[in-house]
Amino acid sequence: MMTEEERIKEACRWLSQFKNIAILTGAGISKESGIPTFRGKDGMWKKYRVEEMATPYAFQQDPRKVWEWYDWRRQLIMKANPNPAHRTIAEMENIYPKFTVITQNVDGLHKRAGCKNLIELHGNIWRARCIDEERIFGFTEVPLRHIPPQCECGSLIRPDVVWFGEPMPKKEVAEAFTLAEECDVMMVVGTSALVAPAASLPYAAKKNHAYIIEVNLESTPITTIADVSLFGMAGEILPELWSNVKKELDNDKSE
Ligand code: OAD
Image (spheres, rainbow, N blue to C red):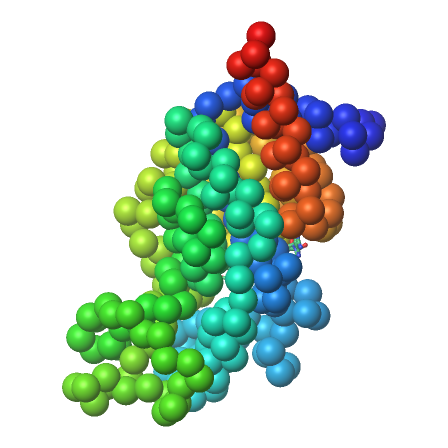
């Protein structure tokens, strides 16, 4: 069993040796920005679970309730700022020839931290679309004056995010799998890895011989395939890991 120090060293070795890096993130990376995760008691809104709220059926049954949940999340996200984990990842992007962030988050914090190569698999909470016209538009009113909001055409507007039971955006998913298959190292940060297809990406990477580094507070299904799991807060682990990698890269340059 490796010590924490040895695990960091190992992760650091791969990140300084390889040039094609993919990062997969989930709600845990935004936790330290004050945005609750979905699972665990902390992620509950009133008494509802995400699987009951983020579905086309829930919206059809009670659009007001679903929008109240999104309004609550949008208010939290609006007040939030990228944390050291988002910022470290944005900094890493400047160093590697091939570097992409694949996120399940809809909060837009990676982009605000400066990430450019970003795949938002589940959409973005600041976009909405009319349920009839399928027109997608920016929708930033916070808090909402009228719930549920309506389109000019009279139909309801819904958040432009992927709900349970809905198809995923084809182009983004295909791109994410290609990146997973081609990368040398995949770092999996703050996801419970329970929701497909994002949860399959580390398996696709592993199958193609990438090293998997996991960063999470606790073990997940990915822990069993990870080459290294670093347990703790992403906002602390990522900056520490990255400062070690930078030292290593500087040493290599001066040799
Ligand atoms: P979850 O809420 O399922 O999992 C969050 C993960 O982050 C857990 O494994 C936590 O242990 C970990 N975590 C929490 N705080 C952390 C911290 N400070 N540092 C590191 N790790 C931390 O969130 P996701 O895996 O993102 O989709 O959930 C996947 C999808 O399920 C979401 O995109 C959303 C949800 O339903 C849709 O709404 C379609």
